[in-house]
Image (tube, rainbow, N blue to C red; front, side, top):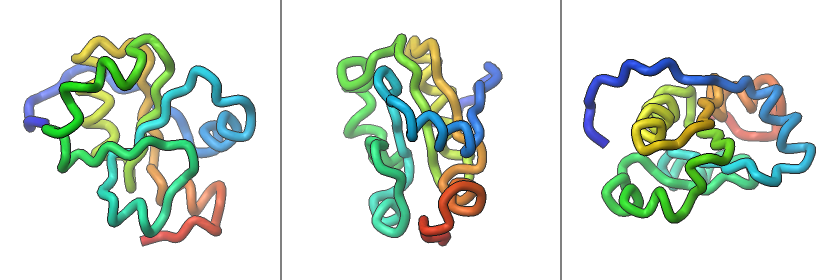
Length: 119
């Protein structure tokens, strides 16, 4: 993913709302975690598909076939920076309902589930 300038505002979802959505039916919601596999090994939330940004070249060309561009897509990282980049990129690829998980897994650990390790 290049460091190009994105100007579209990024829709957001808080970790409390994420937890609520995960507790109910997640049908139709696509969950993407853009952290590195080593980070996911430390802490993760079930249901997220891991697409490390460092491996962008290996999965980017398949994004349209792996995910539905019209389905709600929630993107998470450690604090919300990398996931915001991913959200912007997904929007340039025609994804219409993308949301950045504000605060990432760190906020999820603090505000929702303290059993998720912080790092």
